[in-house]
Image 1 (cartoon, rainbow, N blue to C red):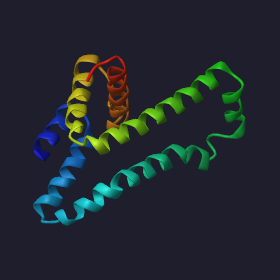
Image 2: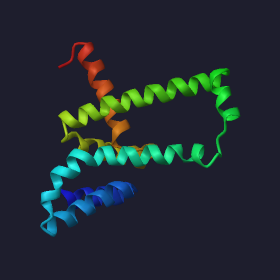
Image 3: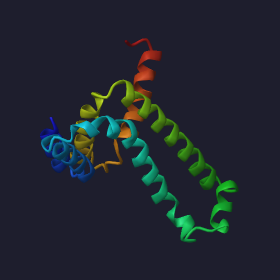
Length: 147
């Protein structure tokens, strides 16, 4: 399965998926599987930590100042950006919940991302947003009477 995920990552131009599957394959082949529970338990938190750090770098490097932040609260574009950010993070949280309860769905999310890249000329932003959208659609389906 890891080799298939590596190939899917390469075909889908998703180096993160290919690299992650490669690292796990190396751990498996070098008999370091004992680290899998730790990686599973803390890996997502560590990844989110580094993602948050990378997003906050412009503040630390002073590329973004208070005068850049103030229009967020006083313009339609700024308020829309705030709402979009809040909605996206909420959906990512729902995606995380879905992946925790249904970890096998990652394969469908990856293949769906590849379809989006190849046929819709999309850009893969990661499994959390894809899972968040999936969770939303599943909840909508449930609400409309689906099973």
